[in-house]
Image: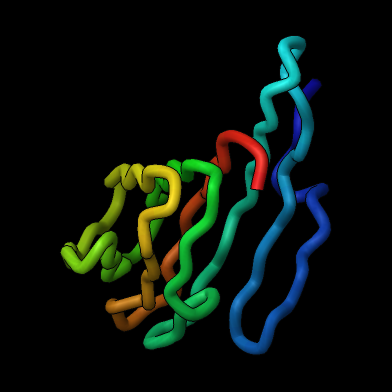
Length: 109
């Protein structure tokens, strides 16, 4: 299956924008969900939290200040972030422009 970015519906949350890309199961029953976020400067998508599934983020534009289990890094274009199961994490946009990134959630929540 293919997903054309311009065809994905945009969800507005204040100044932030997101697009659900897909949410489904592999042939073995493993859940994979992906979405894209456009995060406004100085904002976060949600408060720091943790959950059962792992997450992989790929930054397409801008910079985010990601904190995972108390360790903070500022990352930009092309950077990849892996968050293991149950790690406390959060990320505000630390740049002056909108940050764009894709989240791939692996496993059940």
